[in-house]
Image (cartoon, rainbow, N blue to C red; front, side, top):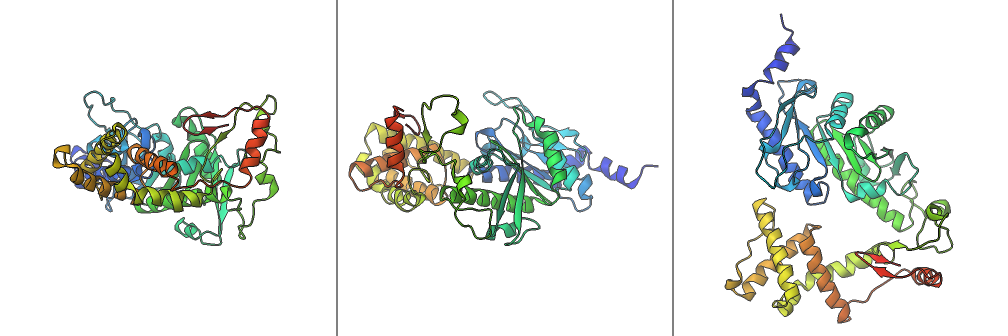
Length: 417
Protein backbone atom coordinates (compact mmCIF):
# COMPACT_ATOMS: atom_id res chain seq x y z
CA UNK A 1 0.00 0.00 0.00
CA UNK A 2 1.31 3.46 -0.91
CA UNK A 3 2.22 5.79 1.95
CA UNK A 4 0.37 9.06 2.58
CA UNK A 5 3.34 11.08 1.28
CA UNK A 6 3.52 9.01 -1.89
CA UNK A 7 -0.21 9.51 -2.48
CA UNK A 8 0.11 13.29 -2.05
CA UNK A 9 3.14 13.43 -4.37
CA UNK A 10 1.25 11.55 -7.06
CA UNK A 11 -1.81 13.79 -6.66
CA UNK A 12 0.10 17.04 -7.26
CA UNK A 13 1.71 15.75 -10.45
CA UNK A 14 -1.51 14.96 -12.30
CA UNK A 15 -2.47 16.95 -15.40
CA UNK A 16 -5.58 18.18 -13.62
CA UNK A 17 -3.54 19.55 -10.72
CA UNK A 18 -0.98 21.18 -13.04
CA UNK A 19 -3.82 22.95 -14.83
CA UNK A 20 -5.52 23.93 -11.57
CA UNK A 21 -5.87 27.25 -9.80
CA UNK A 22 -2.96 26.86 -7.35
CA UNK A 23 -0.35 26.24 -10.07
CA UNK A 24 -1.87 28.90 -12.34
CA UNK A 25 -1.69 31.49 -9.55
CA UNK A 26 1.96 30.61 -8.87
CA UNK A 27 2.79 31.00 -12.56
CA UNK A 28 1.07 34.39 -12.67
CA UNK A 29 2.81 35.47 -9.48
CA UNK A 30 6.29 34.76 -10.88
CA UNK A 31 5.47 36.71 -14.06
CA UNK A 32 4.18 39.63 -11.95
CA UNK A 33 7.26 39.66 -9.72
CA UNK A 34 9.58 39.64 -12.74
CA UNK A 35 7.76 42.64 -14.19
CA UNK A 36 7.95 44.36 -10.81
CA UNK A 37 11.68 43.76 -10.36
CA UNK A 38 12.50 44.75 -13.93
CA UNK A 39 11.83 48.42 -13.11
CA UNK A 40 14.60 48.75 -10.47
CA UNK A 41 17.02 46.84 -12.71
CA UNK A 42 17.14 43.49 -10.93
CA UNK A 43 16.22 41.32 -13.93
CA UNK A 44 17.17 43.40 -16.97
CA UNK A 45 18.89 41.99 -20.05
CA UNK A 46 17.10 38.65 -19.43
CA UNK A 47 19.27 38.26 -16.29
CA UNK A 48 18.10 37.23 -12.85
CA UNK A 49 15.41 34.71 -12.02
CA UNK A 50 12.55 34.07 -9.58
CA UNK A 51 11.01 30.89 -8.25
CA UNK A 52 8.15 30.16 -5.83
CA UNK A 53 6.50 27.09 -4.37
CA UNK A 54 2.87 26.56 -5.25
CA UNK A 55 0.66 27.82 -2.42
CA UNK A 56 -1.49 24.82 -1.49
CA UNK A 57 -2.12 24.51 2.27
CA UNK A 58 -3.33 20.93 1.74
CA UNK A 59 0.21 19.89 0.76
CA UNK A 60 3.23 20.11 3.12
CA UNK A 61 5.68 22.84 2.05
CA UNK A 62 8.44 20.31 1.37
CA UNK A 63 6.20 18.45 -1.10
CA UNK A 64 4.75 21.40 -2.99
CA UNK A 65 5.43 21.96 -6.68
CA UNK A 66 7.92 24.60 -7.76
CA UNK A 67 7.45 27.26 -10.44
CA UNK A 68 10.54 28.88 -12.02
CA UNK A 69 11.06 31.63 -14.56
CA UNK A 70 12.88 30.57 -17.76
CA UNK A 71 16.28 31.65 -19.06
CA UNK A 72 17.00 34.06 -21.91
CA UNK A 73 13.55 35.67 -21.81
CA UNK A 74 12.68 39.37 -21.51
CA UNK A 75 11.57 39.23 -17.90
CA UNK A 76 9.23 42.24 -18.10
CA UNK A 77 7.26 40.61 -20.95
CA UNK A 78 6.77 37.15 -19.47
CA UNK A 79 3.36 35.60 -18.95
CA UNK A 80 2.19 32.66 -16.87
CA UNK A 81 2.55 30.21 -19.76
CA UNK A 82 6.29 30.93 -19.98
CA UNK A 83 7.04 29.24 -16.66
CA UNK A 84 8.55 25.86 -15.84
CA UNK A 85 6.93 23.66 -13.21
CA UNK A 86 9.03 21.21 -11.16
CA UNK A 87 8.24 18.51 -8.68
CA UNK A 88 9.51 18.98 -5.12
CA UNK A 89 12.57 16.85 -5.92
CA UNK A 90 13.49 18.87 -9.02
CA UNK A 91 11.96 16.94 -11.92
CA UNK A 92 10.48 19.01 -14.77
CA UNK A 93 6.71 18.42 -14.95
CA UNK A 94 5.74 21.18 -17.37
CA UNK A 95 7.67 23.39 -19.74
CA UNK A 96 6.60 26.30 -21.98
CA UNK A 97 5.78 25.91 -25.65
CA UNK A 98 8.17 27.38 -28.23
CA UNK A 99 7.38 30.83 -29.59
CA UNK A 100 8.04 32.09 -33.12
CA UNK A 101 11.25 33.91 -34.08
CA UNK A 102 12.88 36.11 -32.80
CA UNK A 103 12.11 34.40 -29.48
CA UNK A 104 14.65 31.82 -28.35
CA UNK A 105 13.64 28.19 -27.80
CA UNK A 106 12.47 27.56 -24.21
CA UNK A 107 15.29 26.94 -21.75
CA UNK A 108 15.15 26.37 -18.03
CA UNK A 109 17.15 28.77 -15.89
CA UNK A 110 20.73 27.78 -15.05
CA UNK A 111 19.84 28.79 -11.50
CA UNK A 112 17.60 25.72 -11.08
CA UNK A 113 20.14 23.63 -9.11
CA UNK A 114 20.96 26.63 -6.90
CA UNK A 115 17.28 27.29 -6.22
CA UNK A 116 16.87 23.64 -5.27
CA UNK A 117 19.62 23.98 -2.65
CA UNK A 118 17.69 26.80 -0.95
CA UNK A 119 14.50 24.75 -1.07
CA UNK A 120 16.12 21.57 0.23
CA UNK A 121 18.58 23.01 2.76
CA UNK A 122 16.52 25.90 4.13
CA UNK A 123 12.91 24.87 3.55
CA UNK A 124 12.40 27.98 1.43
CA UNK A 125 9.06 28.92 -0.07
CA UNK A 126 10.53 31.29 -2.68
CA UNK A 127 13.94 32.37 -3.98
CA UNK A 128 14.88 35.58 -5.82
CA UNK A 129 18.08 35.89 -7.86
CA UNK A 130 18.86 39.52 -8.65
CA UNK A 131 21.46 41.13 -10.90
CA UNK A 132 20.84 44.54 -9.30
CA UNK A 133 23.91 46.74 -9.75
CA UNK A 134 24.13 47.44 -6.01
CA UNK A 135 24.52 43.70 -5.29
CA UNK A 136 27.37 43.52 -7.79
CA UNK A 137 29.24 46.62 -6.63
CA UNK A 138 28.85 45.89 -2.91
CA UNK A 139 30.59 42.55 -3.42
CA UNK A 140 33.54 44.42 -4.98
CA UNK A 141 34.13 47.02 -2.24
CA UNK A 142 36.64 44.69 -0.60
CA UNK A 143 37.96 42.31 -3.28
CA UNK A 144 39.34 39.80 -0.78
CA UNK A 145 36.38 39.69 1.60
CA UNK A 146 34.44 36.48 2.08
CA UNK A 147 31.63 38.28 3.87
CA UNK A 148 29.66 41.51 3.70
CA UNK A 149 28.96 42.97 7.15
CA UNK A 150 26.72 45.83 8.32
CA UNK A 151 25.16 46.94 11.59
CA UNK A 152 23.00 49.66 13.16
CA UNK A 153 20.74 50.36 10.19
CA UNK A 154 16.95 50.54 10.50
CA UNK A 155 16.29 48.30 7.47
CA UNK A 156 18.13 45.43 9.17
CA UNK A 157 14.85 44.78 10.96
CA UNK A 158 13.34 43.55 7.69
CA UNK A 159 15.91 40.72 7.49
CA UNK A 160 14.74 37.53 9.23
CA UNK A 161 16.32 37.13 12.66
CA UNK A 162 17.85 40.62 12.77
CA UNK A 163 17.25 43.80 14.72
CA UNK A 164 18.67 47.31 14.54
CA UNK A 165 21.68 46.51 16.73
CA UNK A 166 22.44 43.14 15.18
CA UNK A 167 25.26 42.54 12.73
CA UNK A 168 24.20 41.38 9.28
CA UNK A 169 26.62 38.92 7.71
CA UNK A 170 26.16 37.90 4.07
CA UNK A 171 28.56 35.27 2.73
CA UNK A 172 30.29 36.10 -0.58
CA UNK A 173 31.19 33.39 -3.07
CA UNK A 174 33.28 33.81 -6.22
CA UNK A 175 31.60 33.99 -9.62
CA UNK A 176 31.97 31.33 -12.33
CA UNK A 177 31.37 31.42 -16.10
CA UNK A 178 28.12 29.47 -15.74
CA UNK A 179 25.62 29.80 -12.92
CA UNK A 180 25.13 26.07 -12.40
CA UNK A 181 28.86 25.89 -11.51
CA UNK A 182 28.04 27.91 -8.39
CA UNK A 183 25.99 25.05 -6.90
CA UNK A 184 28.68 23.59 -4.64
CA UNK A 185 29.98 26.92 -3.31
CA UNK A 186 26.42 28.15 -2.70
CA UNK A 187 25.50 25.02 -0.76
CA UNK A 188 28.72 25.33 1.29
CA UNK A 189 27.83 28.94 2.13
CA UNK A 190 24.27 27.99 3.10
CA UNK A 191 25.63 25.29 5.41
CA UNK A 192 28.33 27.52 6.92
CA UNK A 193 25.98 30.46 7.64
CA UNK A 194 22.79 29.02 9.15
CA UNK A 195 21.40 32.47 10.01
CA UNK A 196 21.86 33.84 6.47
CA UNK A 197 18.92 34.29 4.11
CA UNK A 198 21.10 35.49 1.23
CA UNK A 199 24.38 34.78 -0.55
CA UNK A 200 26.28 37.36 -2.62
CA UNK A 201 28.08 36.27 -5.78
CA UNK A 202 31.01 38.58 -6.44
CA UNK A 203 30.76 40.65 -9.64
CA UNK A 204 27.40 38.99 -10.31
CA UNK A 205 24.42 39.41 -7.97
CA UNK A 206 22.59 37.94 -4.99
CA UNK A 207 20.37 34.97 -4.07
CA UNK A 208 17.69 35.68 -1.43
CA UNK A 209 15.18 33.24 0.01
CA UNK A 210 12.29 33.27 2.44
CA UNK A 211 9.60 30.92 3.71
CA UNK A 212 7.10 32.61 1.37
CA UNK A 213 7.22 34.90 -1.65
CA UNK A 214 6.28 37.81 0.60
CA UNK A 215 9.20 37.08 2.93
CA UNK A 216 11.63 36.67 0.02
CA UNK A 217 10.43 39.89 -1.64
CA UNK A 218 10.58 41.90 1.59
CA UNK A 219 14.08 40.71 2.39
CA UNK A 220 15.33 41.15 -1.19
CA UNK A 221 14.16 44.76 -1.21
CA UNK A 222 15.82 45.35 2.16
CA UNK A 223 19.10 43.73 1.07
CA UNK A 224 19.20 45.97 -2.00
CA UNK A 225 18.55 49.02 0.18
CA UNK A 226 21.31 48.08 2.63
CA UNK A 227 23.83 47.26 -0.09
CA UNK A 228 23.09 50.53 -1.87
CA UNK A 229 23.50 52.35 1.46
CA UNK A 230 26.89 50.68 1.97
CA UNK A 231 28.07 51.85 -1.46
CA UNK A 232 26.99 55.43 -0.76
CA UNK A 233 28.58 55.36 2.70
CA UNK A 234 31.79 54.04 1.14
CA UNK A 235 31.78 56.95 -1.30
CA UNK A 236 31.35 59.34 1.61
CA UNK A 237 34.16 57.71 3.58
CA UNK A 238 31.77 56.44 6.28
CA UNK A 239 32.19 52.99 7.86
CA UNK A 240 28.96 50.95 7.64
CA UNK A 241 30.41 48.00 9.59
CA UNK A 242 30.58 49.64 13.03
CA UNK A 243 27.84 50.94 15.34
CA UNK A 244 29.34 54.45 15.34
CA UNK A 245 29.44 54.73 11.50
CA UNK A 246 32.53 56.88 11.81
CA UNK A 247 35.12 57.61 9.11
CA UNK A 248 36.50 54.60 7.26
CA UNK A 249 40.00 53.86 8.58
CA UNK A 250 43.00 54.68 6.43
CA UNK A 251 43.63 51.06 5.50
CA UNK A 252 40.22 50.93 3.85
CA UNK A 253 40.53 54.41 2.32
CA UNK A 254 43.91 53.61 0.76
CA UNK A 255 42.03 52.22 -2.23
CA UNK A 256 40.64 55.70 -3.07
CA UNK A 257 41.18 56.30 -6.76
CA UNK A 258 41.35 60.06 -6.17
CA UNK A 259 44.43 59.83 -3.93
CA UNK A 260 47.32 60.28 -6.40
CA UNK A 261 49.88 59.39 -3.74
CA UNK A 262 48.61 55.83 -3.43
CA UNK A 263 50.08 53.37 -5.96
CA UNK A 264 47.71 51.25 -7.98
CA UNK A 265 48.46 47.85 -6.51
CA UNK A 266 46.63 46.00 -9.27
CA UNK A 267 48.91 47.52 -11.92
CA UNK A 268 52.14 47.97 -9.97
CA UNK A 269 54.06 45.86 -12.50
CA UNK A 270 53.26 48.14 -15.45
CA UNK A 271 52.86 51.90 -16.07
CA UNK A 272 49.44 53.43 -15.47
CA UNK A 273 47.83 54.12 -18.86
CA UNK A 274 44.41 55.42 -17.93
CA UNK A 275 42.11 55.99 -15.00
CA UNK A 276 38.38 55.27 -15.24
CA UNK A 277 36.24 57.61 -13.16
CA UNK A 278 32.59 57.53 -12.32
CA UNK A 279 31.07 60.93 -11.59
CA UNK A 280 28.35 60.53 -8.96
CA UNK A 281 29.99 60.14 -5.56
CA UNK A 282 33.51 59.99 -7.04
CA UNK A 283 34.29 63.35 -8.62
CA UNK A 284 31.01 65.05 -7.70
CA UNK A 285 28.87 64.89 -4.53
CA UNK A 286 25.85 62.63 -4.78
CA UNK A 287 23.76 65.52 -3.46
CA UNK A 288 24.54 67.55 -6.60
CA UNK A 289 22.96 64.84 -8.75
CA UNK A 290 19.95 64.24 -6.51
CA UNK A 291 19.33 67.83 -5.37
CA UNK A 292 20.29 69.79 -8.50
CA UNK A 293 20.45 67.75 -11.70
CA UNK A 294 17.41 65.52 -11.26
CA UNK A 295 15.09 68.37 -10.15
CA UNK A 296 16.37 70.52 -13.04
CA UNK A 297 15.55 67.82 -15.59
CA UNK A 298 12.09 67.28 -14.08
CA UNK A 299 11.28 71.00 -13.96
CA UNK A 300 12.46 71.66 -17.53
CA UNK A 301 10.93 68.76 -19.46
CA UNK A 302 8.11 70.86 -20.92
CA UNK A 303 10.35 73.84 -21.66
CA UNK A 304 12.92 71.65 -23.43
CA UNK A 305 10.38 69.73 -25.51
CA UNK A 306 8.57 72.92 -26.50
CA UNK A 307 11.70 74.78 -27.62
CA UNK A 308 13.30 71.84 -29.45
CA UNK A 309 10.22 69.93 -30.63
CA UNK A 310 11.07 70.01 -34.33
CA UNK A 311 14.82 69.32 -33.99
CA UNK A 312 16.10 65.96 -35.22
CA UNK A 313 17.56 65.20 -31.80
CA UNK A 314 14.28 65.74 -29.99
CA UNK A 315 12.37 63.82 -32.66
CA UNK A 316 14.62 60.86 -31.89
CA UNK A 317 14.04 61.37 -28.14
CA UNK A 318 10.28 61.35 -28.67
CA UNK A 319 10.51 58.26 -30.85
CA UNK A 320 12.32 56.36 -28.07
CA UNK A 321 9.83 57.61 -25.47
CA UNK A 322 6.90 56.43 -27.59
CA UNK A 323 8.37 52.92 -27.80
CA UNK A 324 8.95 52.80 -24.02
CA UNK A 325 5.50 54.18 -23.21
CA UNK A 326 3.77 51.71 -25.53
CA UNK A 327 5.61 48.89 -23.78
CA UNK A 328 4.64 50.30 -20.37
CA UNK A 329 0.99 50.47 -21.41
CA UNK A 330 1.05 46.84 -22.58
CA UNK A 331 2.50 45.80 -19.22
CA UNK A 332 0.07 47.89 -17.18
CA UNK A 333 2.76 50.10 -15.64
CA UNK A 334 1.15 52.68 -13.31
CA UNK A 335 1.43 56.28 -14.54
CA UNK A 336 1.79 55.40 -18.24
CA UNK A 337 -0.64 57.32 -20.46
CA UNK A 338 -1.10 57.08 -24.25
CA UNK A 339 0.77 59.54 -26.45
CA UNK A 340 -1.42 60.87 -29.28
CA UNK A 341 -0.13 60.86 -32.86
CA UNK A 342 1.71 63.92 -34.18
CA UNK A 343 -1.46 64.93 -36.06
CA UNK A 344 -3.09 65.74 -32.70
CA UNK A 345 -0.84 68.76 -32.43
CA UNK A 346 2.36 69.74 -30.68
CA UNK A 347 0.73 70.78 -27.41
CA UNK A 348 -1.25 67.55 -26.97
CA UNK A 349 1.81 65.40 -27.68
CA UNK A 350 3.97 67.39 -25.25
CA UNK A 351 1.32 67.23 -22.49
CA UNK A 352 1.23 63.44 -22.64
CA UNK A 353 5.03 63.13 -22.88
CA UNK A 354 5.51 65.37 -19.84
CA UNK A 355 3.01 63.27 -17.83
CA UNK A 356 4.86 60.07 -18.73
CA UNK A 357 8.33 61.48 -18.10
CA UNK A 358 7.30 62.86 -14.70
CA UNK A 359 5.88 59.45 -13.79
CA UNK A 360 9.12 57.71 -14.87
CA UNK A 361 11.21 60.13 -12.81
CA UNK A 362 8.95 59.66 -9.78
CA UNK A 363 9.36 55.87 -10.09
CA UNK A 364 13.15 56.27 -10.58
CA UNK A 365 13.09 54.34 -13.85
CA UNK A 366 16.51 53.55 -15.37
CA UNK A 367 15.48 53.35 -19.02
CA UNK A 368 17.38 54.55 -22.08
CA UNK A 369 14.65 56.85 -23.38
CA UNK A 370 14.44 58.77 -20.09
CA UNK A 371 18.20 58.94 -19.53
CA UNK A 372 18.79 60.20 -23.08
CA UNK A 373 16.21 62.98 -22.70
CA UNK A 374 17.59 63.96 -19.29
CA UNK A 375 21.09 64.13 -20.77
CA UNK A 376 19.95 66.55 -23.46
CA UNK A 377 18.13 68.71 -20.89
CA UNK A 378 21.23 68.80 -18.67
CA UNK A 379 23.48 69.70 -21.60
CA UNK A 380 21.22 72.66 -22.38
CA UNK A 381 21.30 73.69 -18.71
CA UNK A 382 25.09 73.68 -18.62
CA UNK A 383 25.34 75.53 -21.95
CA UNK A 384 22.99 78.24 -20.66
CA UNK A 385 24.88 78.32 -17.35
CA UNK A 386 21.68 77.49 -15.49
CA UNK A 387 23.58 74.58 -13.92
CA UNK A 388 27.12 74.86 -12.60
CA UNK A 389 29.17 71.74 -11.95
CA UNK A 390 30.56 70.87 -8.51
CA UNK A 391 33.58 68.66 -7.80
CA UNK A 392 35.31 67.44 -4.64
CA UNK A 393 38.31 69.52 -3.57
CA UNK A 394 40.81 66.68 -4.12
CA UNK A 395 39.76 66.10 -7.75
CA UNK A 396 41.80 68.95 -9.34
CA UNK A 397 44.97 67.79 -7.55
CA UNK A 398 44.45 64.23 -8.78
CA UNK A 399 43.82 65.37 -12.37
CA UNK A 400 46.94 67.56 -12.34
CA UNK A 401 48.97 64.65 -11.03
CA UNK A 402 47.76 62.31 -13.77
CA UNK A 403 48.26 64.96 -16.47
CA UNK A 404 51.81 65.58 -15.29
CA UNK A 405 52.47 61.88 -15.87
CA UNK A 406 51.19 62.19 -19.46
CA UNK A 407 48.11 60.09 -18.82
CA UNK A 408 45.88 61.32 -21.62
CA UNK A 409 42.24 62.30 -21.42
CA UNK A 410 39.72 60.38 -23.52
CA UNK A 411 35.93 60.32 -23.63
CA UNK A 412 33.57 57.36 -23.89
CA UNK A 413 30.41 56.62 -21.92
CA UNK A 414 32.24 57.86 -18.84
CA UNK A 415 35.26 60.10 -18.47
CA UNK A 416 38.66 58.50 -19.04
CA UNK A 417 41.74 60.38 -17.96
